[in-house]
Length: 324
Image 1 (cartoon, one colour):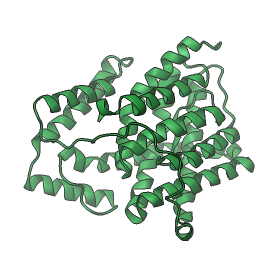
Image 2 (image 1 turned 60 degrees about the vertical axis):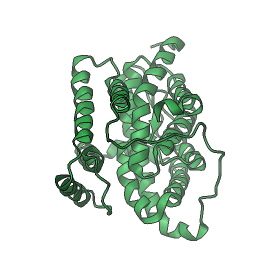
Image 3 (image 1 turned 120 degrees about the vertical axis):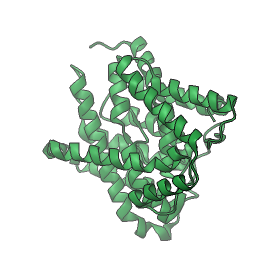
Image 4 (image 1 turned 135 degrees about the horizontal axis):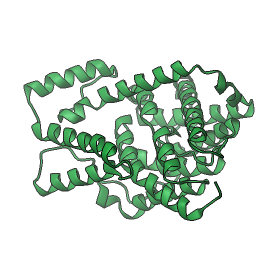
């Protein structure tokens, strides 16, 4: 496939539409807020597109990474999550230097499938409190937290929240089967938001987003806390490497002429994760779903992923009040 800037522009815009609600949602789920998800999508998305080893990969916050970050946020707070991201970035660059990407071919396929299924289950459990419209119970064991949320709901039901959650999920699932090319995820979120405001539904809001990215800062870094965060950082780096290389391989399989460089991809992810925490972003990885959308939308070069990051940056800079 030859390079077609026009198709890359369309693909990048399409991916941005899909990525916007995901970035907001994963930022909130990680415990650092919607603005952290957007900062990650913009900063990590742009840098990984430039320095990574796949010209079709789209990088940002993901559900799999969110699962790992939640207990870190509970134990160490936002500064701990940002520090872990920084350390993970260093580890990823180190993996690239020693050319560890080549070993990805030895990971058994059932391991990947089991990993994906497990992550999906954990993500679903994490959303139970918000879907039921109850405060998230304390704790980092998702099964117990979800069970407590159900008990709280039964004591004091919040039917508007449940109705909105079910309606949005149904619209996304049924819409994807009916017209896969239509961004039903964004349409469902937009429609539910308008309805909630129009009839003053008693459901929680994301809140106002910052109109711009913060200046880069290392103010979160506490050298004394680094030793206790090395273990979580290595886990985050391992997940980022695995998910990113899997996503790049998926992109290769969907394209007739794309072959990624695994070691360069690790380097790009390392650079992205080194930079994202400086702007308040969470650790990022190559995102399989967004990468698949990118390929299906006709992307042929890194320009598409860069356009995706630029569109999200425009949302942060100019349209934050509209999506808050």
